Length: 142
Image 1 (cartoon, rainbow, N blue to C red):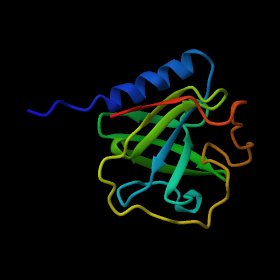
Image 2 (cartoon, rainbow, N blue to C red; image 1 turned 60 degrees about the vertical axis):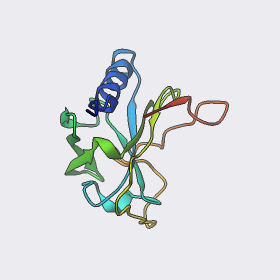
Image 3 (cartoon, one colour; image 1 turned 180 degrees about the vertical axis):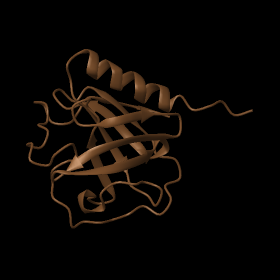
């Protein structure tokens, strides 16, 4: 018997930790055909989304999907991200968080006509800064 994935629980825990400590939770997503996000912000098959309370509306983080509303260029959009496609969740301010393996990616999208800024409530905000020292401090979990 295969055990259920711990991934949705870890994503929710890191999100809660970020919010409790005044950090902005971001998720990195490998976009596939089931991922409903603004395609114009997908770059190299990936998108980074701001999941902070100020950036989302009606956020639901279930065991199978992260679903919410967010504004892009002032326009409200409905988003749906399969938990299986979340490759990381981390705090924008310091990069602390967790990275995940993506199991058997199916039909990844490789749109490259997007700006460098991560997606979020409104794309007028500056892109997240990397913590000094280079890469975010992420731990890979299966």
